[in-house]
Image (tube, rainbow, N blue to C red; front, side, top):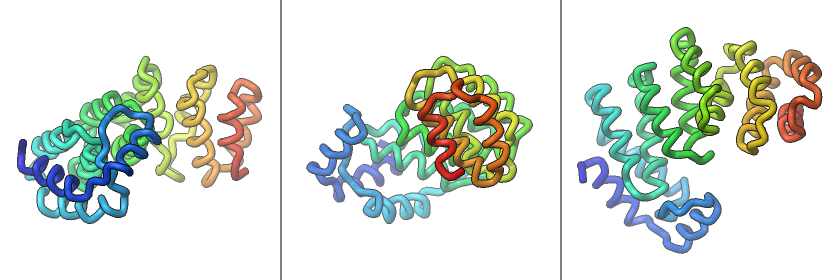
Length: 223
């Protein structure tokens, strides 16, 4: 086990709570083992991790994210995402394949959403001309989590959101019956309505019943 993996494993082992681990696994509907460590307890460990193990370059950034991700517990994967988020200088289009791997392999909302919004979304905002064509491929992907990532990837873009692309993705995925896609559509529209409510109202009027009730309710929550 590499040094970073040993660090996280030893620190998390000290904080492990078997009762909370059982409850956490049940809540997440996962067979993956959990340490049972609540977020406030994780935070000091993660801060120490970032301070102690800064990557020397892009290759080490990539390898250390995967090193943490490969560990067996759910919280280890949270540590991997935290590490990836901590070093913005390495959040470049060249890392999209790494982030895509995390999304495909994570395949559940607690992992996918963090990666989509805070890693893919960060790269997309800074490199829109490069990333947008990739997202146009993701929205067509068979993997629902990849499609969800494309829909919610602009969640923090505020006034810089590519509105046309957001609406196109929502329109394209509107027939989808999968809960996590319908929820993503509503979430993305609701968030965009904070900065551009009129365009979201117009889009909802245009789509009518083509959008699911769930998507419409989520989208219109603050309108």
